[in-house]
Image 1 (cartoon, rainbow, N blue to C red):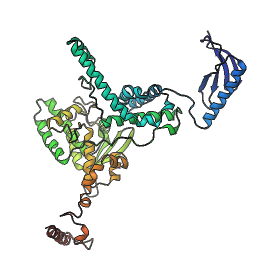
Image 2 (cartoon, one colour):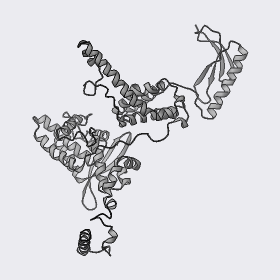
Image 3 (cartoon, rainbow, N blue to C red):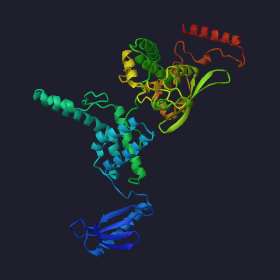
Image 4 (cartoon, one colour):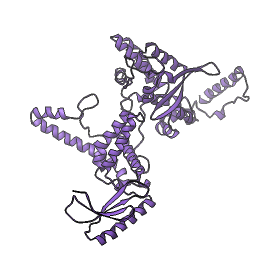
Length: 465
């Protein structure tokens, strides 16, 4: 049986027809969208041909008005739009524009939480209230899922073992294969990540003309910024010292090789600020050792990650760490990766399990705020140390391949340390510089400048006493 019956063209791009796969005799119309090969079909809900023609022309006028004023023509439920979004992101991951882990995070957030929250709602009907209401819903949902799980465990216990074993076997697993049960709590970091994915899907929908640009959720994420879990100078020194002992304690040549690679990896990361994906992609041809006009050694790295390329510079100590890696490396050709496994191939984990073990052994796996640390903490440590030393935010942002705003948002806690002299001004021992003798000439010799400095210190000690 033909799908389209009694087709009649009313004008170019507009036809009315009956369907052969339905029992009723109502008319339908199909409208070709201007300047595209897409079509919009409506059921006219009448069997009278004259009424059908009138309604078809009405729909055609509505379509042309919507196109002219950039209003969405098609509507889809959130689930359908999210699937299209995930398909595009998966393709990006396959071509290296985003990491596979990033895609897995988005896929999990959509199917585990976002679809349950707004999945059945048409994408054009999602308002700002859905955006601002997500954190509360997410926290309530986490508690509800824990209550349900507790009830299941209770019922299993009453079944005296057999059911409990089955439920444990069906329980969700973490990345190490261990049973994972709902805790009833959800971190702000998780909520922020899920909300950013929700907003990304809305941006995707706007790009596909499914919603207007104005429908994209506006405003900052309604949760406090997540503190980066960097190491303090004291913790870093402890990690540095313990790691050398950790290498010596290796019980095999294979273990010693991997521990040595992991140790030099963390030193390079803490002294360059690279992202883990950038380190994963780093090849020997991307590394160049140079000297500046004063004869100081520096390293220039051409790194790529997050779909972007950039150059960064590092001090001479990084050249030493790289040379250690090269000496024990299993593949050191120009096109070989810097960080490899013991067979010379690229390492996908960047020694994550080894570093996790090292941090646990030296009791640095958990930060002072109670958060678990990962290899990304090395990048945050680099940023914190550089800011503490007074590096300009603009230059640091360029070095790290990020924005000044990101540096200010995530590392604002460094400001008091960097500006201690201003914050403590006026306290004993921290009097205003204006109160102290000043060096009058800029071209004075070191010996001539030393005297005012001693006098300044003496005056400050006397005034403090």
